[in-house]
Amino acid sequence: MLKRTLLISGILSSILLISTIIFAKEELSSMFEGFSFPTGKTTEEFVTESFDDLFNIFGNYSKLTESQKKDSWNQYKGKYVRWTGIVNYKGLTNDWNRAGIRHNIYTNVELIFDDDKKNIVKMINKGDRITYTGKLSSLLDRNLLFKLENANIETINDTTTDELVSNMREGISIYSPPSYNSETSADPGLKESLEEKNILTFEGLNKVFGKNSSISQTRKEELWNYYREKDIEWQGVVSYKGLGRNDWSRVGIRHNVGPNVELRFDEDDKNLIEMVKKEDKITYTGKLAELFGRNLLCSIEDVDIKMIGDKTIAEIEKAVSASAQAESGTDNTTDAEVIKEPEIIMEESMVPEVTKREDIEIIETVDGLIEISFEELDALFGKKNRMTESQKDRLWKEYKDKYIRWTGEVISRGKGRVSGLRMGIKNTEGTDVELVFADDKEDLVLGTDKGDKITYTGKLITRRGYILPYKLEDGNIENVLKAPETTE
Image (cartoon, rainbow, N blue to C red; front, side):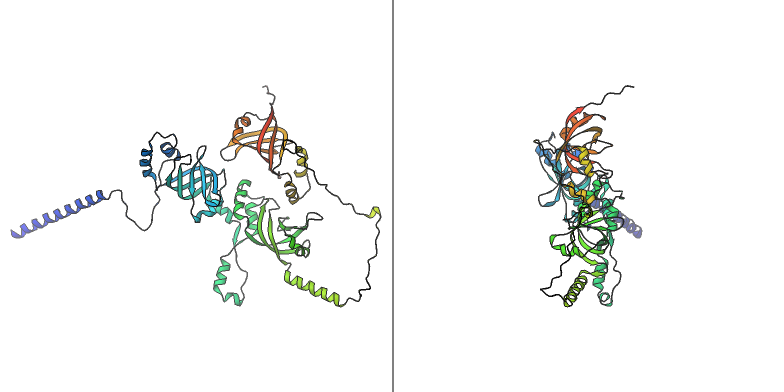
């Protein structure tokens, strides 16, 4: 009987102990509800509200008092958002790590980037539509409403940054040293550093920026900002030297069917260029300068020629010096005996014809425009002109940023969220001019119809290519002659 009583007592004590533990656990849970304990890594907590949702709460037209706004802000501060907006500015003076984002009319959000995002920030430009994330850190009381820290960019104009980075990396191949001698292989650290070195090849760059690339011209220009001033070491064949009698400083290089690259030398490199002849195979270094994106892909500055054929410049200079000394040692003439070349008098019929292009005089009108018709300009830069692309680029500098007044036919017009207010115009055939307007010209532009004949002005920005038209900015319409209505 006693054993039975003790057994029942033990069971009751256990039940009481378990109940006490469960009650205590529930009490502790309620006490620490809403708290999280550190686990060694932090997680980003995203809010589901859109920019418009938070703008309605905290913006200029909010009906909340300042006190209510502060109370509401405590619910969002420190949490992350994922929004989509338009880049209004990038950097403030020397601050590369800031970007202003527009969601309505003004800059509403400022993104603050960490140092590891520098390459991503380089990829965006004003007017880009981006999807971004960031931590809500400051609430402001102006049109610039939110400041976001630890910002990141996920897409640029509907293309993921991963894809854009992949496009850029297509232009880079991993360097693989051809062979190592015994001295080099004895240093594993040197071998490892060479294997990890990234070398930009012409073939890789041409794949990204060449005429057969699937990337749009706008995106190529944006990506080029990442490559500009990168160092290269390439090997190619000399296609031309100079673009005229007095222009010695440019050398065209062929890598496949070309020329594909133009080397631009400084004044003190004249002796170096004199060593090079057409069809020489040369190894050269330099910095990427200007993108053309056609057969002539780009220009290179700060050029240095390392080898001509299989000989280094030092070997060539040594051989030239030795040859000069040998000639001076066998020279039998004295100072008093100077051998003169016979004077050759050429008859007029024997003189070769030299075709010269006279300098073109650019005349500006009193209202700041230049007097040149579309036909005259297109005769210089159009498809029928036989100048090389490099020659056209050089001449274009005389016309770029000049204003013109032309008359043409409206082919298309519209306003894109990113591309802005634009119009396609036919002056002779097809769309040969793209005219870009400021937003305040929207009613004027959209008030025209296809087929209307307009007199317009604009600033020359980009010369035409094989497919692309001339691009003019700061457009304005001075006169519209409506197209006659067609009857069914």
